Amino acid sequence: MARKAFAFAASAAVLVPPARALAHSFGRLYNLPIPVWLYLYGAAAALALSFVIVAYFVTEPSAVRSRRTVPIDEADWVRGLRLLPALRLASVCALLACLATGFFGTNDPYANFNMTFFWVVFVLGFAYLTAFIGDLYAVINPWKLMVEAIERCSARGWRGRFAYPPQLAYYPALALYLTFIWIELFGAIRPFSLAALLLAYGVINLLGAWWVGKIAWFRYCEFFGVFFRLIAKMSPLAYMPVVGPGRGGRLRWRAPFTGLLDERAEHFSLVLFVLFMLSSTAFDGLRETVPWFDLWWMLL
Image (cartoon, rainbow, N blue to C red; front, side, top):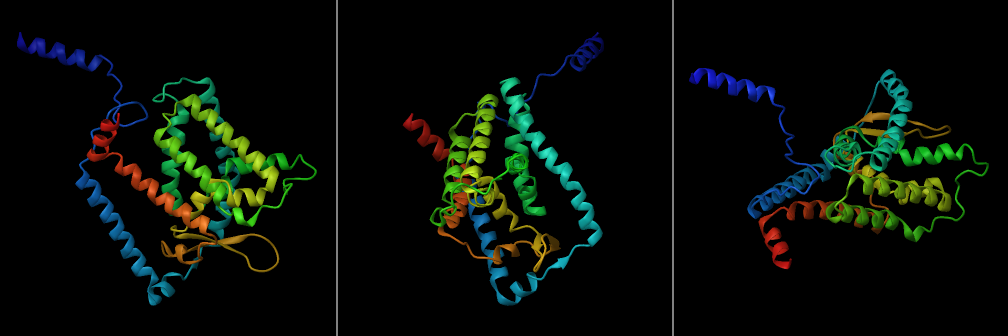
C-alpha cells in the first residue's frame, strides 16, 4: 500500500507543471545583503589585480614587447566584413523589437523581451563581449545607422548646423551616463517605461546629430559609444586605420590591455567619465552590503 501511494505521489509530481522559478531578475524580490567583509575583500582583490596589470604594462620592456601587433589573415578579415550588413540589420531590428515589445507587449518584466535583452544581453553581456572582440558597437550602433539611413534621403546631410564647441568635449556623454546610471539604480524601470526611454534617447540622438553633426555627436555625446570605446581598449583585437590615401583599416592582434597605453585622455571630461564608470560599479556593489541596508532602512 505504501509503495502504491509513493508511486501515485511521484507520478503526480511529474505531471503537475512546475511554477516559475525567479532566482535573480527584474522584480521586487528581496535578496539577502552580503556581509561587508565580502564586499571589501572583493573590492580589494579587484584593486590589487588592476595594480598588477598596470605594473606589468607600464614597465618599458613589457610595454614595448606587448604593444607589438600581429596582422589578421586577409581572408579572415574579408569574411568578417561580409557579416557586417547582417549584424547591422540585427542591431536595428533588436532596437525596434525592444520598442515594440515594450509599448505593445506585457508589462511583466519577467516575460517581456525588452527587459532581458536590454539589461542582460546589451548592457551587461555586450560590455564583456566588447572587452574580447573590440569596439563592434562603433559599426553596428543602431542610432547611428538610423541617422545614416535618413542621411541618404537628405540633400544637405547631417553635417550639423553649428560647430561642436571644443570646451564641451565629453561632458554631454557624461551627463547622459549619469542619468542612465541613476535610472538603472533607482528608476524601477518596467517594460513600457524602458521603451519610452529608448524612444526618447533615439530622438535625442537624431536631434543632436542634426544640431552638431553626425561625426561630433557620436564621438563625444552618445554615451554608449564612449562607454564601449573605452572598454574596447582592453581587447586583444585592434582596428588599425590605413595611413595614406583611401579609407579603411585592418584588424590586428595585440596583447590584452595594451590599448590602454596607446593614447592619453584627450580631455578632463573623459577622465571624469572613466572615474564615474568605476565609481558607479563600486556603488552598485556597496548597496548590496549589510551596512547599506541598515542605513537605508534606518533612513526610511
